[in-house]
Length: 225
Ligand code: SAH
Image 1 (spheres, helix red, strand yellow):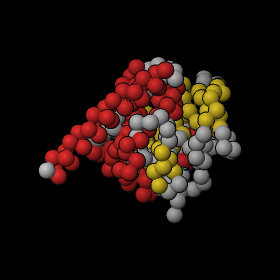
Image 2: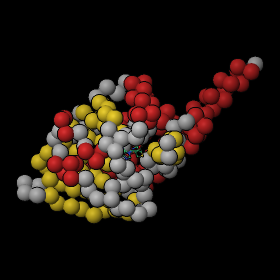
Image 3: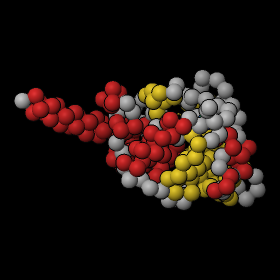
């Protein structure tokens, strides 16, 4: 009897989560996300697997949530927005991500581009993210424990770079590792609110587009010890 109730409850949660997932997608659409492929990937990516079980019931709210180590899983809207900006000029083969965190943004990217290279400074977060991506059978991602300020020079240049923590200034190494025509999406600023920027490597120099005001945790210096 207890088991039957358990099962029922689980199914109930499953159904609720299906409905709440649809509601999330509807909301993201209303808020201005328009890339159908990106919305579809967000719809099918189980965000509840990227947060603690105790928070799983809030996984399909459009909000950032704590993931330990003083870090947060990004808000779905922001994941969608940054992914759309990255993909706006066409498909990408090599994308560098700085700030793996829970691996949620990584998982979304992995379904939309050929290969993802993801750098994280906190080993514990990286280990969990690796496990989750393996569970989801997303195999086109490689991880590196290190300092995102340095990018990942050995495997560059990249057609896209996405930074999911706020940098006081744009790291020079990331500009250097951008391929011609490559796109860098990064929140820039030292305060509580930062400005999302899109930087494109042109034939000569870079063009810079100043976008929304956003709220990210800071891009810290050096790998955590
Ligand atoms: N996209 C992630 C967001 C994680 S929050 C998600 O949705 O889960 C930002 C992440 O950037 C944190 O995991 C933090 O540890 C990481 N980070 C901060 N400074 C860094 C640095 N210098 N190099 C690499 N990762 C960094």
